[in-house]
Image (tube, rainbow, N blue to C red; front, side):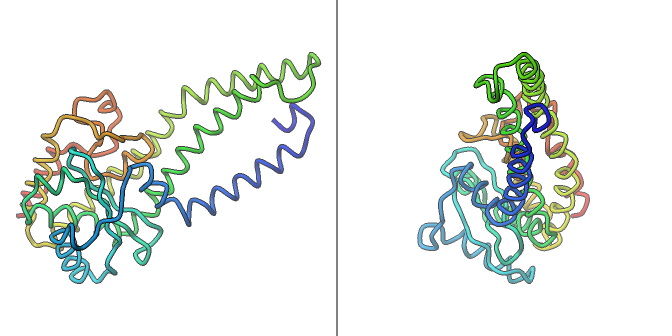
Length: 263
């Protein structure tokens, strides 16, 4: 873009923006993920079982107690986020708390704590910001053409046309690119967190049973987002969504089969 418009300032701005986004991703991506999901802090008084389960498992895993959040959503689901084990958070939906027995809740929390212990959470959370950045870049290319930045001569009109095409291509490809990124990092990490969580509770059936209940819920989450989908323990778009063609999670049946083979 800088070359097309003959302005090095655009290159400097893009470089500054890139550095800023990396710093922002490291320090604040967990807050972005929680905000996108509509999570609110969970108090010990209101969610006593959630607190006690998490405290006990955190002690057993040798991890600091994460901050706990609740998402007001009937769809049962959960995710962990944060830049490291000392700045981690676990969010669960009200639907999860209503549907699961205590041993099943322990399986889910153990799974999320395993993501923290395995250092998955920073990687998965930063992807939230990077996926959003793809969308921002495509929008910038498109708007640069629509608002006609630069002079109105023929060369700049041609440059604007090229940028508009690039913007349209990015708009089409960014969801696919984002999905491929998430597929590459998410599926193996889910299998590992399942196994680590089962070892932590020493009761694989708890997580297996929880996954059965979670996957049986057909409706998507109210604030389901492609940016955060890979972070959840199960697909937040529901089992019948078109996004099933590009699942960020391994097949639930396979996960359950592996867990029960461990028992």
